[in-house]
Length: 183
View (tube, helix red, strand yellow):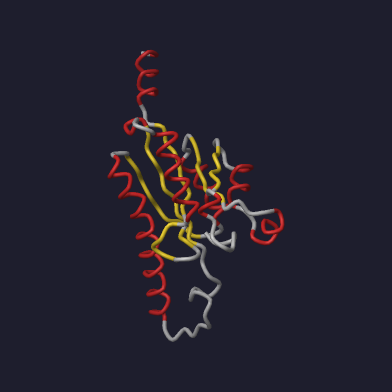
C-alpha cells in the first residue's frame, strides 16, 4: 500500500502558480512585460517538454481604484453604475487570463486561472496558502532602491512571506520601457 501511495504522489503534476497582471502601458487585456516573461521562462526552463508533469495556476489580482472609475472624477448616478463597473472589471481580467490559458492549450499543458481583488502582495500570499502550489513564479520589473521605496515590490514581499518556494523572474533589459516603473 505504501508503494502505491508513493507512485500516486510521484505521478501527480507539479503545480506552479504564476502571478499575472495587466500592462501599465497598454492596459487590459494586455499582459505586463513581467507577467509574460515569468510565464515564458516557466515554460522554457521548468516545464520544457514535460507538459504532462505540470499544471499552471494563473492568479490575476485586480487592484480596486478608490472610486472605481480609473482615475477620473466620478459621479455615481445609480446603483447600476456600480454593477456596470463590476462587470467591466471582471471582463477585463478574464480577457487578460485568456492569453495565458490559450498559450497553455497551444503547448498542451494543464492550467487553471482565476481573479481576486485587493492588494496583490497580500492576495497572492493568501492564495498560496489556500491553494498550496508547489512553486510560485512572479515577474519583477527590476526597480532600483529609490523606486522600490515609493512603488513597493510584490515580488520581494512574496519571496519573504509566501508559504512555498518563490522564483522571481526579472524582465530583460531590452524589454524595459523608458520609465522602469511601467510594465
